[in-house]
Image (cartoon, rainbow, N blue to C red; front, side, top):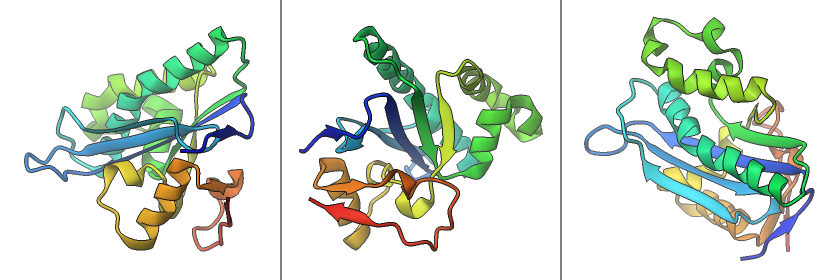
Length: 185
């Protein structure tokens, strides 16, 4: 594994969920943290409750990872490193709306999940976290949540192990059709 940091003041988390993939129809969450090259912290686990949609599964996944996301920020600050951005990348725009807007984006179906997304909304409002969009084709957390094969498996494995670097432009609101460049190294 090769680890290096582009900027110690910016923590990037990639979190994704696979909806209802277990025999009991529970979803699976995967995610990891990077400073630029390699992922020193990763997680892959079955969710503890059933969800009714991929949006809810993504929300549960973000909530499951939130303890690690917030703890890492606090740990780095305790080491004397000021964290300017703690970014949680997700590929589900409905989930991002719920996390950023709270009650204003919710309906009757999300009522049972109020505590989960209100916690994340509260952390966003406090400045402890920001949630940004990452296209599905660039969601590295898929490696920990889905059975990938072929080129995508190889690409994400190299990124996680630090054998390739990715540019910070890989996860923004650009078109998924736009080419993202990787550096072998």
